[in-house]
Image 1 (cartoon, helix red, strand yellow):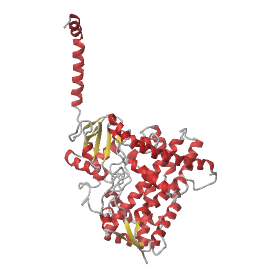
Image 2: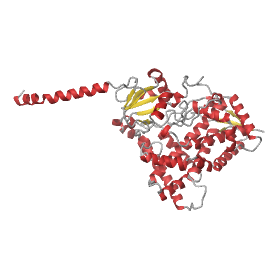
Image 3: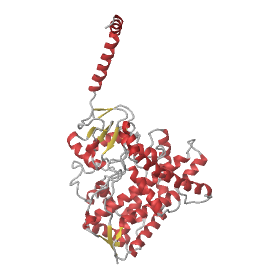
Image 4: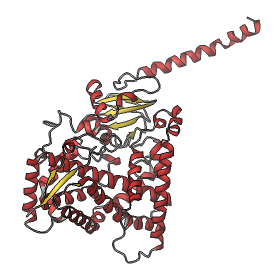
Length: 491
């Protein structure tokens, strides 16, 4: 070793020792953090393989070992999983603001115009503005009521299709999809779009949103999404939906809406863009992103709730009989049950609560993200930790519910628990700042349709496969097999 090199090392020794001490101090400080319990993880992929095809089931099983608040790693991303009422309440109420962030996810970013929608946009001023527009002007009680005629019209069309089946087998799932799609189209866009191309586009949109993106959780392997064709598939759907929405916006810009009372949601958003009374500039891509939110939530979630509820009723004849009796008492021989009658149907509402408990459309809700370091139930949670609320597991927790796997609507008849985000035992629509603003929009459609289905027809399942309660994979959980039924008109 040369004298010069020896001199360099000797003179650098204090600096090297300082760096080593700082590094040791850093890791010592890090090790002193009280992190939530975690399952073993593999290098690079973390616990991804443990989730399988049904993550809500897998996470429920893991929580039984590691507790209701656990920290897992999906790829290189730390993910806090809450599986109890107390944990969900602390996240979505006590520390709601801290956990109101959204993670950066590849597919929503590609589909929703860089997440300019409401559901996936980052927490901040932009989100506050678009959420305010939705709550006050698009999905307010008054606005939802203004579309009553649309709901009743489409419900009558559906009933007529069932009557024309004349007792033969028909696909009830398909009829429910068509009804919800038509309601959302008329409310959002002013008219229906019933062509196969549009329905296919909606299905492909929901399919791509449910796909797992490797790049969202292992950034160094984001090329896998390109190689697998996922990015190309998402971009194609996004491009086709953009072209469709561009045509819709052009139609609305060119039509005269002065004096028109029944304006659709595009009319309202374009009016905000023109008038700019709040000082918040609503750009064209923002309008399209918000309308896409209405379609994904309004169509897919509404359809899913109604399909699972109908399935449970058909599997439980005594519950169906009790609901039919309530409908007959309320209907009193009239041609249809109207929305004015729904508040006099407590058992109908209990049936939906129980179906939502067992079949939450988004079992893990939309992911949250912490926006700062925080102490949660004694654990240290770092900023930018992704958060999953296993609402499905909470709704089946035996410490919250008696016989949690059984379909028993009666449990809600004398219970104050509701699904509107105030009771953390039942969270189908989330809670807090990031709770779904479209609850009333979805549920009034469901209640009206189900009340009239059981009022007008005696329904029966056809084929053993319809008793199969297997779920599809994806962000929204559907029934795997469609509902094939027969219907006899009530005398």
